[in-house]
Image (cartoon, rainbow, N blue to C red; front, top):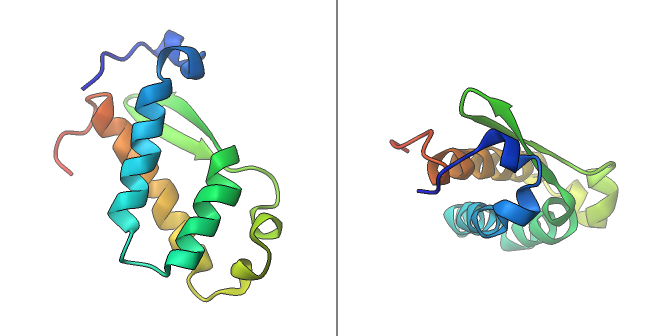
Length: 107
């Protein structure tokens, strides 16, 4: 668990870069094997690599996606799992951030 300072999270890439990488990596590993790897990889590399995590307060985080996520992945956006994988990935990143920063100990 990392000590968390909401003000420092404003400059998250300076103070919390390793924790952010860990959250995204753990989310990927958690979903690996549950969903089509082509869809998971495309979302990770084309959408989430350009996403932005924000601290909302009260131990809650939000991941903001870049504009036009479907366009970023091309034909993968037509895959039946696209929406569910994207939603699960974002939810898991937010969960991992809560855990890493000590807001959520039980999941």
